[in-house]
Length: 207
Ligand code: GRF
Image 1 (cartoon, rainbow, N blue to C red):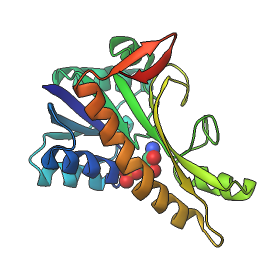
Image 2: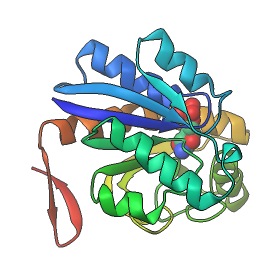
Image 3: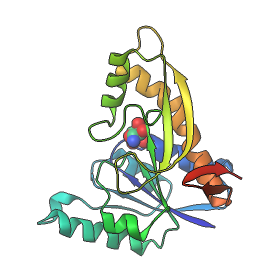
Image 4: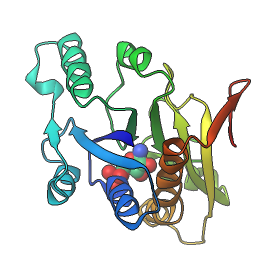
């Protein structure tokens, strides 16, 4: 049984997709053992509570330094004894020590087809604003392993979504969530839970 901890900062629609996929059997062999947020107002925490999932807020504001927060975050994660950490809209830079401790066991959902519209400064609506500004006709989402860079880890899954005339950043964000993020993130977790991934020369393939 894969023990999963989901790290969130906002509304938690990706967390909800994971919860629903476990409930429906789309994700097998998996238990969401905890949800961690840096934002005490994150609706994602309420989603966890409604499903009886242990949830905790650990905010940088409550610590004298970033180093102390980083240590407390890693201690909190370790207490769950997770096999896999899932970043689902988690807007905190992951401490290097945490990446080392959970090498190839942290995944992230990014709302673009990496390597487009990713890296520092590309998060939330900013990603979709940039895509519309560029005039691309296809966008999408990417699930990737987390390494020391920003959105630079090995790509696990991607799913494309069409851009439509008249799209606003908000409309496009919602379409990417509905038609890509909420589909490939649960799928990626299920693949990991059932040992269906292999890494060859740093590239991820489904067995
Ligand atoms: C999603 O768009 C995700 O791609 C990005 O942050 C957003 C989180 O949304 N990383 P939610 O909290 O899952 O609704």
